Structure formats: C-alpha cells, structure tokens
Length: 230
Image (cartoon, rainbow, N blue to C red; front, side, top):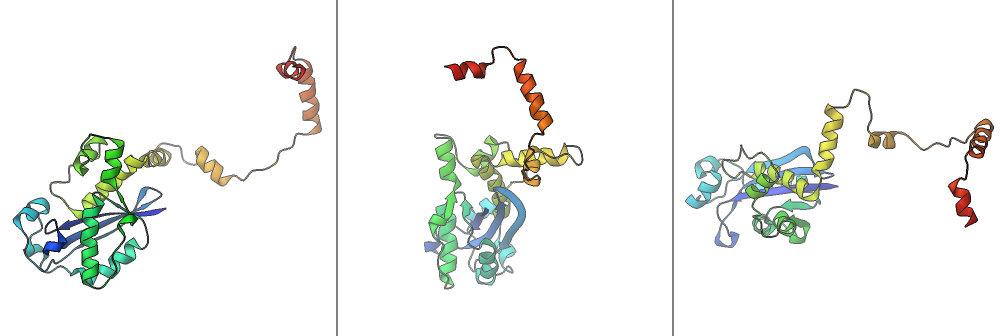
C-alpha cells in the first residue's frame, strides 16, 4: 500500500486571511515503511513573512523571493501524491492551506477524508498525553537532534517514523534490519522461505508406512485408542 506523509510551512494560520504555503514536504511510504522517495519544494508566497511565522520555520522573504510559485510546482506535487492516502499531523490545518492554493489556480480541492490525522490517532492511543510531533518523537525515541526549527520535509520524515510507531509498522522494519545485518549470507528467514518455496507433496513410501505401523504396535495404551473407546 502506498501512502504519502505530508507537511507544510506557511506564513500564518489562516489562508482566508491571505496567508500562503511557503514549503511542502512529502515522504512516500510503501507498506508502512519509508521507500526513500520524496517531494520537496520551497515556494514564493507572493507576500511578506510575518515575524511570528519566521520564528517557527526560519524562512525569510529574502530566501523565498526567488523560489517557484505554487502554480509552477503543482503538477509535480500532484503527480507525486497521485491518488495515495495522505498522512498528516493536524490534517485540517495543512489541507486547508493546500486546498486554498489549489483552488486559487483553478484546481479542485483534495477531500479532507483522504487524510489520516496522526494527532487524532495519538490522542486515541494515548488519551490525556501530549500529541505534538515533538512529544510523540520523544515518546518513541525518535531522534530530534536535527530539528532546531520546523521544516516541511524534516517534519514529514519524523512524522513517517511516528506513524510507523502508531501503526506498529516499525516492527517490520526491525525484522528487516535483523535479516539484512545479522543473518549469515545466504540464510533465509521463515518469511523468505515461505515466499520462495512452493508446497510439494511428499507421500510416505510403503517401507515408511510399514515402519510406522510397527512403531505404533510398540506403544502401550495409546491415547488415541482410549479416545476412540470413549
């Protein structure tokens, strides 16, 4: 199953007030694990950068002024996410910004129902506990050393790891790591064997059947005869 973990950075909290997306980061999951494929772009917001937003992500207007417009990256963005389910932390926030950008240039909005909200997942799994991305990374011992400020691609990568923990998917990654790094060359796991070996019939020979009968005759008061008598 293909899923896309998505995050954005913006100039503010409400696109209806004229705020815009300034960064999009997407990470591809295949079968609940990071595939290595990603989409990332900084965007020119065509407006000023409020100080409050700058303190969150550190993206200045001077840095963004020569970056592409959303309209220039929309085709690549939509091609990358395709029709895959989306995984977003506080999905309503990012979706309203993405959809505002899409509608502004004449594209249809993406249904909110297409997104899985990891905030809701975390609150259901850990009621009463903090559900911020930082808090969940600390809960799951995910390395936060590179997160001095918010960044869409970095946050999408961290969220991908959090999502794997919330869904139990990192257990599969653990066994994959064990197979790749610890097993001797050429040794297969039971899962490998199940995939590579097709079922075959091994009927016993007449000699084996006769030996089996002789073995049964040596057993005193076998349980299966007592069960048949009952």
